[in-house]
Image (cartoon, rainbow, N blue to C red; front, side, top):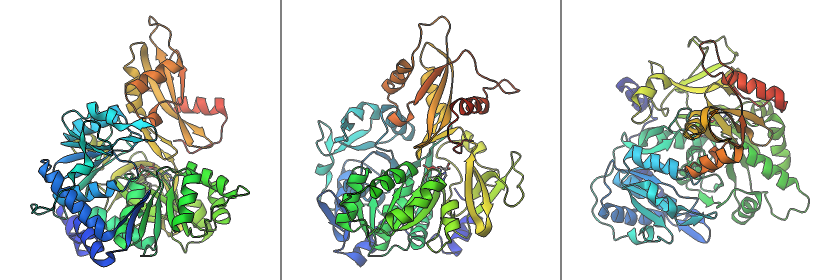
Length: 535
Ligand code: OOB
């Protein structure tokens, strides 16, 4: 957490206002009452109704034994119940741990175990997958299911008559644990407080000019930091607008909702932007997209050629968003010249976001040159949750977060992301820690060693390539066998290597470590693909 001098400063400057998400919901329910807050399928929930639903669910969850400070793993698709659940947990002061719908037994098991979760909230079936099958991975946690509970606790049964609950959390308490994309063996958890997160939400809503006329299409998985708070669904609830939940992000589903609900703003990752642009430009499109004012693109580097197509094709502003669940979020602003909007990833939210661009020895590089991005500020964490050892290297001694991103700063303080120094693959915005996948592959008895690297890809930006050194005495390995093995270990599908290649040995660095740099270079030469920003 922040040293007291910083906390005092952030309070004095009005960033931290001593408000919680409970205060936000109460204020919005008072202010916007009967206006529709959330639309999901045929369900339309007003601000006043949302407050009541959260209060009733808080009563039921409390009766179930969930208390202040308890962790609850929440894995829900884009459904209205997501809001009931998180605001009910906020009311109690229990911490949602935000899993994504793509996560499977390996991830859910780890989240529940590592956080000692008391409950796991999920859905019945979504996009053909039965989430109740993950119950075994949740260990001792009570399994709560939105929809058909199949023998578990039904979420629907937990909405109870409001009871007198103990006082809720303080503004400087943790509000939830968010997931890090990670670059190490196991995902890290990101502790965010009410004070710090609310500041980023309010400031984002202002930058994105949200108001009561805003209609936000949530096409990405709602629990991810981008659609959650940049300005995302929480920004909309603060500003009194309307959230429209898309069950899937494909153009047909999204365009239909944009047309029907008069969507004004939405957020996508670069591959989705590409799909939408192609679909929007197709002759004979029957949906009307003219209500759309802003397309936010972030999560991974947006290619210049794609950026250039947004305004002519969709007739709306492009806003580039470069953010991270650890904190720092950058936006291009609506009044910015084309050059900035098309070619930079924006500038920070806050005048008190401190940015340092340094070389390998943590020495600042000359202005305008590429270096490692370090950051500190009023909504950037000072450490991962229960990860002492990792924190010692992931942060500088004076509290700057090492983002692992390579950037340069251009005039006006705008950042251009040029690459990455962390061992992570950014597969169309979905982050994959090389080491996590390597550990799963290494568990195969026929594998001697493995190195997982990114390979440039025209559509996703990057794909995952696994180089495997087999054990000489073992039965011959095949790529499908390795992929199947990893899948069967319960790893999310997006983490399963796109390609597996068998080699006799790895190139090594001077000290004898596997040289991922040489592996990537060899791959790039061989594939001669587009030069995507692979660090
Ligand atoms: C967002 O958050 P995370 O935590 O999934 O991933 C953060 C990482 C960054 O460190 C960077 O490597 C990459 O994703 N990234 C971008 C980018 N936006 C994120 N790289 C290049 N260009 C961009 N525009 O991805 C996230 C959180 C809040 C808002 C937006 C994105």
